[in-house]
Image (cartoon, rainbow over all chains, first blue to last red; front, side, top):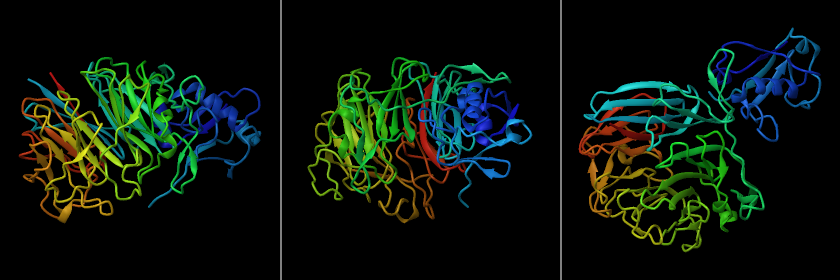
Length: 98
Length: 392
């Protein structure tokens, strides 16, 4: 099981109140996690990545294992602790403003 | 006894304000979609408990929400309603994809950008939702970058009416300070094929065939920031209002100037008259008196607040030119709010009520056509839009 932490507004939109646990088929990548997340919560389609290009939205970041993975290729394998569910895959809304 | 339901979209969620016909005591519900910008909410005239809302975020994009019970519960209908593991209704957030097909007109790929170069159309958000007058499943959406979309399945799916961007002037449209947004959609109950829209900063357009073909209707507009005063598009139209009983007569609050057309937009003439300033955003028309018009003058395009810190609505009972100040109940001093283009509305009660919301979070009501005003709420987030439904 892969653990995904969503930002507050996406938890509200998807009506979840804690981490999301997902069964991810095959190699665990950004893309495979988001595919599984969107399949389970269709309301999240378009909110993390573009509906059609699947490009990450500009103010979204992906963190895991104390690394910023946002600029990694979406089909790169994620660190093993993420794939094993030991560490969460974090979807972050960029913080800005005062 | 009739009652009213006010739909207020704000920077941090949506609120629903309800009262009986006296419009003195109000029940306030919300916030809905907490923390998200709600650009616009509107109810279906054909089924008043069917509401649509544009929920949007610079971080997370666009979601269209729908209610079937007057706003008590909501669902995101795009992609089909499903149930989450917790049993909540859920659905796909809605896709707005520009039509670039060869079959439906002249697909455009660029418009004019701030620096004069051509820039690709990029969907940013839905500014305005206009439900059909007769079918609760049909809604028009005005979006940024400017285009008009339509759903005929209750917001499950949206399709562009590409004749607007494709009619020929699209490459000359350019963004105003708020972005290149299609913010006004007016349907004509006497002529189902007729639709008016307005875009900042392109101008006003009209379709006479249900949105298939469009033409610019900007003759008579004068904009000092344009080198050619007779140019077909490029005007920063802020809002247009129409009385349903007289659909050929339109009133416009332009960037500067209050304008009037008596021939469905073919020609415009200025009716700013004795207004202390003719800059502003909001404009509306009395429900039962088609020559009675309301504006909220704003000091200038550089100073978006009322003159002298005094919040005032101005009313013309003569279709423009002669305006009277309406001040009873409105702030007399130290008021530096703005009133956005979609933040004024009128109800349909016998004594017409007027409503507007401010960037300071107040929603004001006048239950007597503007003579007296009172705040319904004072401390909401900045108000982006106000609509009102009159319910039996």
